[in-house]
View 1 (cartoon, rainbow, N blue to C red):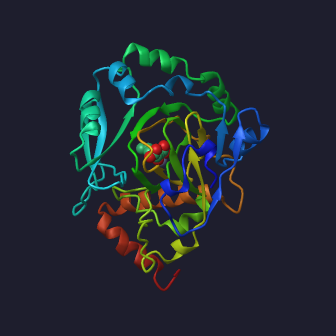
View 2 (view 1 turned 45 degrees about the horizontal axis):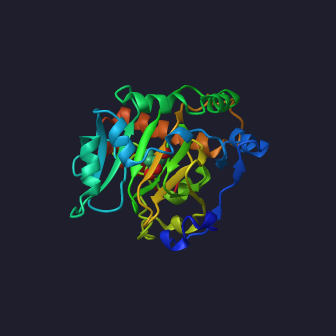
Length: 324
Ligand SMILES: CCC[C@@H](CC(=O)O)C(=O)C(=O)O
Ligand SMILES: [Zn+2]
């Protein structure tokens, strides 16, 4: 992967032994970008100026202007920040990280504390508690361009802009989301690896009832190929996002993010949109339709059985010796 203008070098990236092909990179005026978005394929868009007013959002600027609202900050003993749904916690589940609420200056002090043993990741929807300067920056995002994308692709409403402040080395393990996302890098450097929905069977997402719903069960650093043998077939599409880059991250595409080692803080903002309504069903079903159908089937069975421990038994009764 070629470092742009020597902003970073390959030794700042974690190494994985699956193939990683480059993601398409287009200028915002290139019709190819619109084409790929229409086809729900990922593309890195350069020059959109989507969040150029946020490129100055470093820790000092934010500490001065972000206001005294509380922020969700994840605290981890490792570099991994694997999301869990705290409304789905099941007995025996131990959250892999701690969810804390802090005002920004507490987060600032935690990051600057040289003697700390924990790692931190601020992940907070931008809301009306932010200070007036942040509101001005927000209003001056390139809403004209992104609203055009939303309209062209018949997406639903913007559901949230998540402010992400990550420190060097942090990893968001592989998962998928059900919404369309224009992932916008304000500053710092993040490497992303994407996998199409068709690789669902290689990535073994947790069951829908599990707190780690939508997250891959496979530990990329030490994949258990006995439990997850098809993982060895996985093929990724990756790039490094730098300041001003916008990644169109289609719904249901699996993705993994890492903040480059020795690259300091990385600030990004998501633009999550409700996906377009499913068009008329044609066969064979698309991978996205199959994923949605599998999710609904799991939910329906859990609803019928009430107890998630019965779901495993039910599946085995249904499939063992009959379908597999
Ligand atoms: C909580 C969201 C984290 C983000 C990845 C990252 O920046 O670490 C992501 O997964 C997404 O934008 O969908
Ligand atoms: Zn995600």
